Length: 292
Image 1 (cartoon, rainbow, N blue to C red):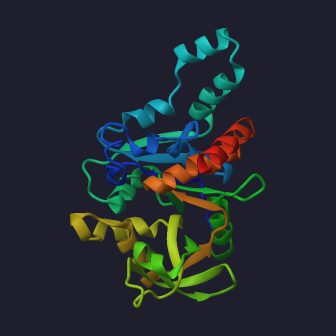
Image 2 (image 1 turned 60 degrees about the vertical axis):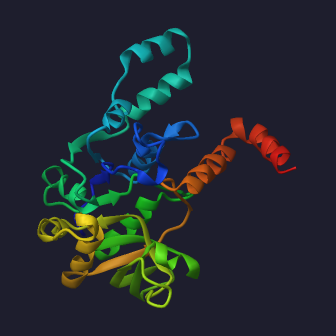
């Protein structure tokens, strides 16, 4: 049996430039989707998948993330005195659902460097890496994305990439995966091509959402030179990892939202609100009126 994956890393140190000016003063990870910040969806997915400790890598101006996951006793006392039990449970839940560790990235040095900043906390263990702006909703009876990846990791004892199939016109937007199929959802990765032309793309499989990674990735990241934009990219390190050990891709199921993108952010708010019984009826009526 491979070593148990107990920890997850969430890089949350980026500038969020795709959603400026909203993210000039507010971390993109703290923008609300319905009534929870984006990053809470990611942490809750980790918890639902059995993760015991979450390492969030932050940077200058991201203190709101730490505050959100901290206890706020004055607010709790007020909610309790007002009999607002559901709201009280919600704010306590965000601060107590899992052990959280915050690590600071000194400067905007790339997402690979952000993951490397968590090395002292992760140690020599396999771990999950989850992007902080990528929500995959499995539905009320579905399996969380990370849980899907962990099943593949437990089967093969190797790193696993989350993947989706994307239409031809979108291939230049993603890291596209070249692989040898094992079954209809799992394959062994042979290459990853970052934002290829349609003609160059090795397949219709795109890398999204996150990974389960073996600890060897840290040594590779430590030796990975800066790439595009002078930053250290996790994708570059994963390509080198493929050269020394097996890496698998798994097509994950669920509704995916890249909430760092303005249109996807709006879609996430609308569709996830429609899943809420207390909001669905009024929102549906409003949308019908709007369309008319």
